Image 1 (cartoon, rainbow, N blue to C red):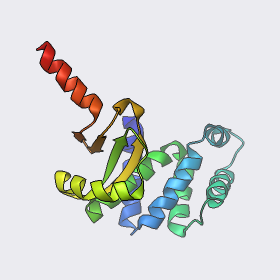
Image 2 (cartoon, rainbow, N blue to C red):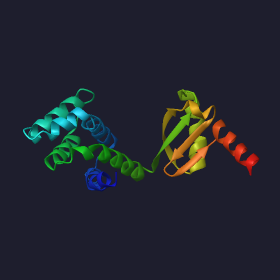
Image 3 (spheres, helix red, strand yellow):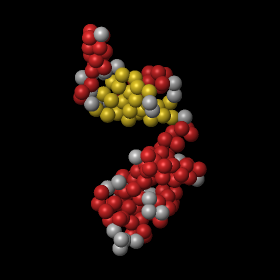
Image 4 (cartoon, rainbow, N blue to C red):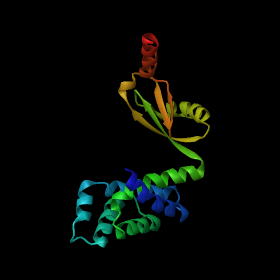
Length: 176
């Protein structure tokens, strides 16, 4: 949603400019997970609910999962005061991207046909970092449709060594 991205950008930039570290961005992500809930959105949209009640609900629910710092709580207060609670998940995404950019690390989505353990990740991480030319923070997702191999996505770059991709290339070569 382009509108939410536009709304979220100044908040994310302000969060990073305020010196937020990975812990603060993680806390904002926890707040965003609560704020994304449909029931919380419905509660926040009720005309008789005050901003303070919304702040307390979101902070309280997220606080059960992890302790909240003042930076994350101040951002939540600003978002709630300005009626932008729906943008909080996008703010968290953009803040993480800005923090990664500042530290020279990129997010990598690695899709695998089977679950991967830490040893397997340890083997492929240096290969992918060399391939993409930067430090990577890897998130693994299981996709049985790949049949075998992996598919790595970093930004708009894709490295696909899956059996499904190989079969597709063979199909295209045979039909050409």
